[in-house]
Length: 264
Image (tube, rainbow, N blue to C red; front, side, top):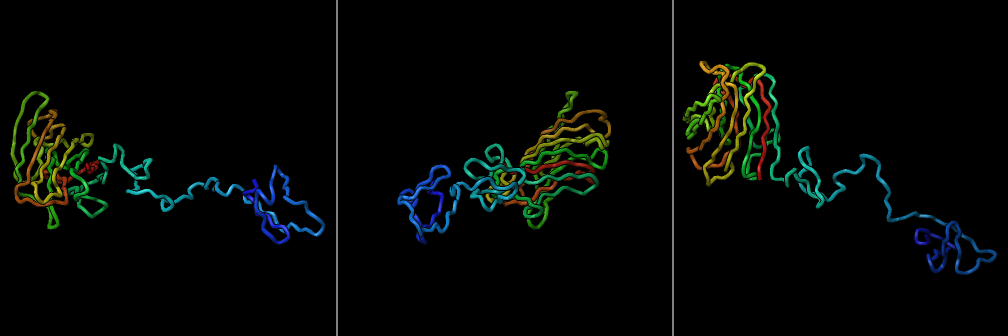
């Protein structure tokens, strides 16, 4: 259209619509041209409001007005905010895969992209594990900047065998303790889901609860499946904690696939 063109006649820029019009490939001036008139130039700009289609992989995040954290666990919502699936309530913070012996699996705030602070109300660890030592028991500790804590816990476990028997135990050296050792055969894993509460709250005691299932590897209980519920409270001090440790009661963690999630 005329509005998409720059036209100069006799050195004067013409006003589109009144000085000239366009129809198809024909330009018509308001006044008939006479001998000596010079059309200096006609620049066709095209549709100046149409930016066209950008080439693939050329639009960077900096060109967007989106807010939030862009990573493998979030998506861009219609209101230009990055959020996790489920309304952003549960966020995958860190995944750890162990294929050879390690003494423990540690999630420490500020290291390896781990966040354990007031960002989330609760923290959940879900995974599978096999100990290097036959019959080793799965445990969890918490800690703060001066290290992990191995005392002053109130922890109790309820264990239910598939055969119908039950047992209870109490431990003070770990926040969570799952009774019944895990069979360490290479084809067997124990699975668990453990949630920590009030980790970053310096006014409330840190607590945790856990569920665990595994083939029993302790002596005298061959081929039994342990279904376990465990809970614990740290009563040593009312303080904030910024780290979680997964370990075995004896020996190393031989194999594991573990994910830490934050719950807002």
